[in-house]
Amino acid sequence: MGLALAMAVLSQKTLADPPAVNLGSASGFAVLAGSGITVVGATTISGNLGTFPTPAITGLENVTLNGVNHAGDAVTQAAKTDLGLAYGDAAGRTPTVTLPLAADLGGQTLVPGVYSESSSIFLTGDLQLDAQGDPDAVWVFQAGSTLITATGSKVELLNGALASHVFWQVGSSATLGANTAFAGGILAFTTITLQTGASVDG
Image 1 (cartoon, helix red, strand yellow):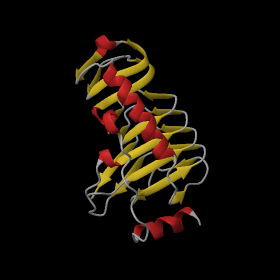
Image 2: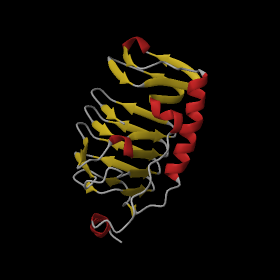
Image 3: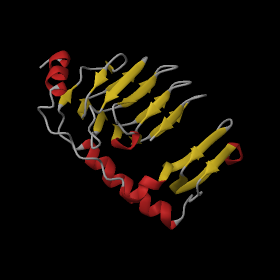
Image 4: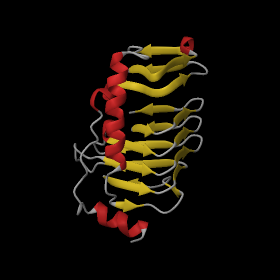
């Protein structure tokens, strides 16, 4: 089934929306890492901050933190366990749409579902997520390797879509280009990098 046909099928709501990914205690964190956090330049983080088992945070003086720094403590350890479970859940979902290789989601309007790509997902320009008035609408994006956005790209939430119901499961690394306005929680196995001016509503 081609991508265009799959979108037409989903737009008719013939497939049940997927349930949300349960983040457990990780849901209170804006940034939750395993091998340390590096901050370069002025950064605002709204939510808790933590890293375990490596508690090092470089550049913390650059951060305006509207939350609690839990680096290395028991709260972070529990949240990391929950994050691992959530990552496994997201990665194990059965796709409703299999994206073409090296899919670029720019210019698309997508209804709820599980969108899977075996290598990399790209975003150049704007992606619209349309809940069609459903308050329980959920999107799960599965990138086998990387998630990469171009400078100035944007994820827009339409008709009741919630950032807390959007999940990006990434097999290795996610990189958000400069001035990207992103929506959804990023669960990346290796690293997450935000370039200058990038923001995440998760």
